Image 1: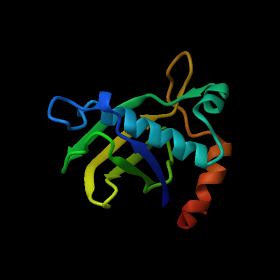
Image 2: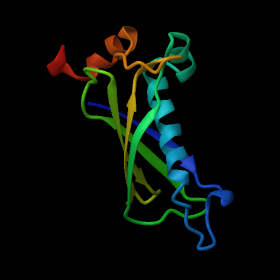
Image 3: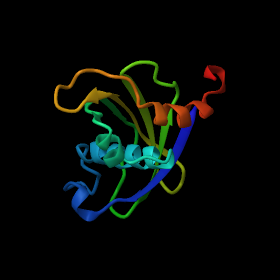
Image 4: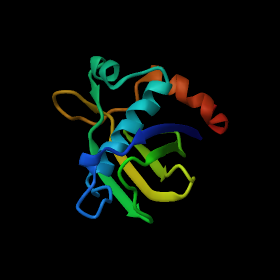
Amino acid sequence: MFVTETHIRVRYAETDQMNVVYYGNYAQYFEVARAESIRNLGFTYRELEATGIIMPVVEMQTKFLRPAHYDDLLTIKTILRELPTDHKIIFEHEVFNAEKKLLTLGKVVLYFVKMGNFEKTSMPAAMRNILISFFPEKS
């Protein structure tokens, strides 16, 4: 299992009239956390795209348990529970406040596809070679 943590402070513009983070902002929070998770593997989205592979989001689920508010420091835990074996990669997210209370759960499914024609492909070998060390049962 591969797990990373990313910290984001809620900005005023991300809240609604009720002083609660607007639900649509969680897609951006999850994206920031995913990008940082990939960066922790030694890659960036830009480098991935340079190989001719892009990762569109094909599914997103979010469950709101408690609200986040302006100026809260959020910790977004990003989890890969399974090593991708085909064109699909599943990122799970858990959002916590500074008191370590679980606020939000998320799941985002992306595909590895070839740039230009969107043909499904597998994870780049260099990325897989790094990620596999987090899944000893697959080695």
